[in-house]
Length: 112
Length: 501
Picture (cartoon, each protein chain N blue to C red):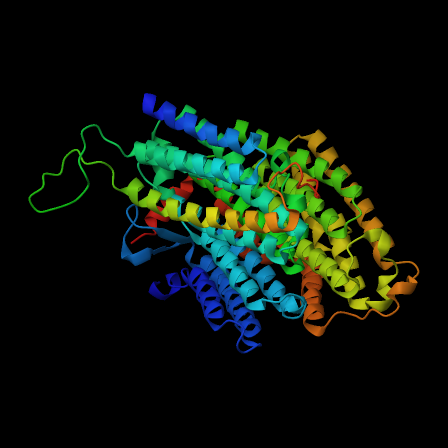
């Protein structure tokens, strides 16, 4: 149970970072933290107490294996996260070129 | 039967292949990107119209990727709602792709634009055809990441700022969706939508479903810009190049937001009265807030972006009513809105192309110099405001009648009021931009090139004749099929699982 709570705390920490920080790079780091928290949660749901790695072989007795599917799924999700992060950092670099600052309070020509 | 289901993966494969080929070719033959993109979207449009016919004759069709049967493998499902969304998406994509041939000459790297555009299209088509929860997330991310890059395409100050805001909010939305999927998976031990629905129907699962509903409401609500989650839209949509504004406002917020909400809430976890009343409230809220914010805008594209929020409100209100009439009104308005809002954005792009400005105070009398743009803009304005013979009138009328029938008189009142305010704000657009005396400095401007006129003309024709879709015989083929999928609710699981063989 404590593991899940820690995982959730990590997620909230990331969200807090996105909402409160003024530096663009720190916001991106916030996104990454909460993304890892979600991935970690997905992996945790697959965990079985004392389970072994889900590798099938002829001699192995099939009992108490951890769930293999979330591991594959999280791998995909990490790759997607990489693409998003790369794009975010790319945009951040261009913003620095144009505005000369990473401070979002100074980058507000538009009002949503 | 075997041939019929093989059409389903085409909707993902063709745009992916197109974008790959364009990326490899680069700029070498100058005409190649235009030709490939135009051809790809034309084939997709033809295939999606074919898919409507197939969905009619076969009912639900399932394609198993790599021949792994559900619930182990990933399924692609073609039913009425999917076919309906495919036609909407690919129709707008085709018009946009024709328009971009001339419009994107202003930018330096046309081939990169088409690569991202087709990637986004592949993501949207994939999201619509998939029958697997995690697969839905993957396609959603493909479409989103491509759209972040496309919003930043101009790489000027405002584009970058808008794109950053959009990308951060979009990523947080995706995280909420992924968290929801993770919780659902840990509860049901399956990712297949149909299987998940049948497991959820058997379990006592009140609290988990409530938690997941809230997560999905936040995630997909952000993607579809329903009011408390709308802050990114008025920045992002005007900052993109005009063809992409048309795609984003026309179909992206609908396929990523509304379609996914419908599919998950109606077909997988089952709609409850509480959730649908929340949706109705949010729908009415976005309808009213969007139109009030729109009416004061002087930037043409920004005004249109706020109207997108308002019109999405109508769609959400109609679909969440849950009555057959309300759902059909919502879906019909979804189709109509994607047509006239893309047309309006393309017209705004045409004005910007000719004059270089988006400020309404700066324009005036443009109809004299740009008759085609003026006429199509007038048609689209009347459609969105709900003037009788045009398509927007019929869908709004159906939604309002359905709201009254359901006994929600206040919601109906707000719907009518929002419609009147829409009319007012588009009278403002017509008055300041197209009618009146031509300003001195615009005496040299020319009408836009032929491809832009062509695509605007096609969309305008659909605006005029779109009302015919509601004639009973035509509706049976197209709209009613999509409505039946939503109305059948969690029985969807049984139908899909039965047609896997």
